[in-house]
Amino acid sequence: MAQKQEAMQQIEISVENREAVIKEYAPMTKYVANRIAMRLPPHIEVDDLISVGVLGLIDAIDKYDSTRGAKFKTYAEFRVRGAILDELRSMDWVPRSVRQKSTAMDGVVQKLQNKLGRPPEDDEIAEEMGVSLDELFNTLNETKSMPILSLEDMGIAKESGEPQSLLDCLAGKGDADPQTHHRLVELKEIIAKAIDTLPEKERLMISLYYYEELTMKEIGEVLGITESRVSQIHSKAVFRLRNKLKSIIAEEM
Image (cartoon, rainbow, N blue to C red; front, side, top):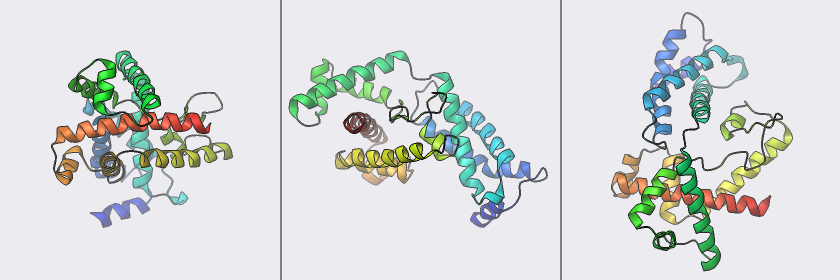
């Protein structure tokens, strides 16, 4: 299978083999859609994401140029993921109530951190908010679907003023000017610094989920905990990372 995929990455895509390429990379499209869906609210249908992803795959097939040296699989993944994220952005799929909860929790965490001189514990956040731990975890679970960081936060936007996503820039859809490149280098450094501040278990969660690309179930098997506990740790890690990134950016910009 690996040899077959490698061969397809090197050949010219033509009218004759177009359908075969779509079938070959359909599993990849489903995989990308399911990975994104895991971080979204339940009302977002994964089948809808797959349909949009297929359109991204077709777009990749139409625009792929083998003479530029990039492997088709890499290019197609960018296009599939980009198409799905573009669709989600156009939907404004994060409810206003969830954004309000996230903003309120951000304020509580920042207040406690200034008061305590350290990141607050879960029970301290819950007490300050006047909610139970279960209610706090439910809120964390709702807000985990919000973006961790946008390039707008880093001062990176198109000349028109329209915000760009990190994917847009990495995929070459954004402006490849020196300033943008410099800010992207800074962004990687900021993210690395923020991850280093996370508790060990949450750092491991970020590594396994985002870098090793394990599923929640697979991470549970690795750590010897339930899938629901994995989801809980992931939600906490995402929330803590989002707040730390905002804090670092405020200090450095």
